[in-house]
Length: 511
Image (cartoon, rainbow, N blue to C red; front, side):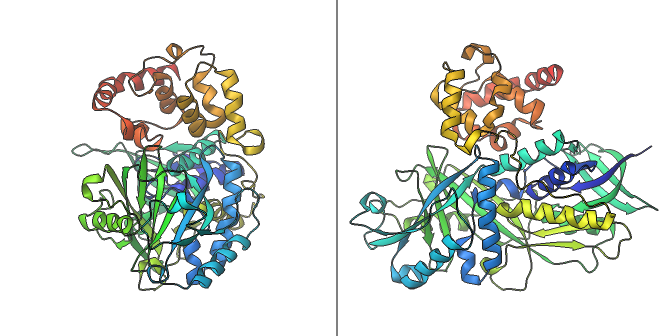
């Protein structure tokens, strides 16, 4: 007999994970299926920001910006270990900016006041005579500017923590499991799943039943519908590729820069992983393989020029250490330029289906919680068993520390683990928050954490990822649950790759 669920969620990105968490917390039995790893697609390829979207004011998206600013405050309270305020510097020169000074100042005033701020500071004007350290690396034509605050986020872990919380509230999470087809039965959906699909091998198939289905497959949203015969009269999406590159640390300070380009777009330059600078993003139409998205040479040149046009130190392709790209599934609102297309979301109820079927289009990382809440509200109204929303006040796993101040939490952990090196303490606190004790446990020294594979990557942490964070492949651990792969020497990687099967086997055995 088929497994039966109240809700089947297709897609393990931020929207799918958020919906699964919300629904499980309201008492629904939930199954989430993800074709690859949690957050392997668009959700881990963002600019790593929880922000209102200052540039959207120019396109009169006041409602979206206001909602995003409210969510910025909420998410900062929900996950203060993986989200933190960040200062952004906006250099200004009339010709380069393409906008008058008063317009920039008005935009920042609106940004400050569209929603109530508690933990994020407001904007300020800057002058090179008073703020010489900020202007030191910029080209001499920049004599004034602005600063404002938004938040940095570990995007992949934000998705992960929603999936972890969903599972702890009763949801079942299946990664590396593709939804092959959805079919309406008399009273329930029949969902055909294919797991562990590999080239040259026949995938394992199974069928489950569900009262309701949410299609949150991101760029694949309409592909899922086409395979099941529900693609008629659905919204159009626009696939827009966004690429980022990482270079050695390019400027001092923990602030970021927002750089206005000649084409009217903006590019961020953000401190990243202590040793690096993250530069992005591009925006270009994409029609290629959604499972094989890479930065193009033209995009690399564009981002290098975007940085070099503002800073005295110019960069080129030889400075690029790493790149990543993702495809954003924007709801196609008919606007010609990708940068002007709305980042708001659309929840499409399929009226040609007798049973509840909802597809998610568009949206942005910052507003995922609102999207999830509205999606579950809609489903529960259709199912005549409404339960009040709850996610706006509940911390995500690891974020449950008093006052939400990371510095206070770290001070407490120093007393508990005085033997832990400061760099490791900081990384554990930023990644795991209050859950770092789940793998540190009663350890009294670094030796108690098991083998050190190099670069302070200990067996205890890797085992925790495998047991509790849906890690299956080494890449999952090194590039999504963490960014340890960026810092890793070749010999460390080779040692890990050789030991990985045993690490997984041992972790699963001890679970």
